[in-house]
Image (cartoon, rainbow, N blue to C red; front, side):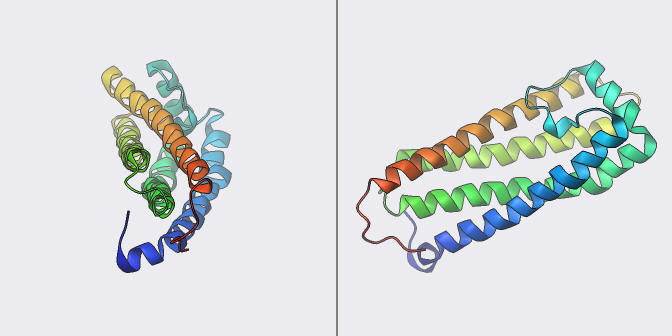
Length: 182
């Protein structure tokens, strides 16, 4: 599916992006999101795959206080600006690597579209969170629902993107081994 130098190194790119993405994810889970939850006593927006309503958003933002909201903006959002791109690059590079043995696969192209969409909705979610924090205490109900919808979409699309990568991997294991490069 890819040509030349890039195809010869797609596995290395996938592994490298995966390691960077995993490091960022662990840093968010173990440090920034854990701190936000400790300070507020509530689950952060990023960790609510089923979304949230205006009352939930107001409760979290109030409980965070001025310093907690500043921490969200200063630490969590910058990390979550890097993470969607690294996750998408990991998934896409993995699909392209696998795709070397699955010629002209619509599944690979679909997985790439899902991976890109996942990152897009994560960025929309982040913009919504930033807008809610900046507008606090006067956040609008449509803003909360837009951010929450982006969170739900990100969660669903990311799940499907990962499943497509896994399914592609299963198909990959059943293909002839000629021509595959790390």
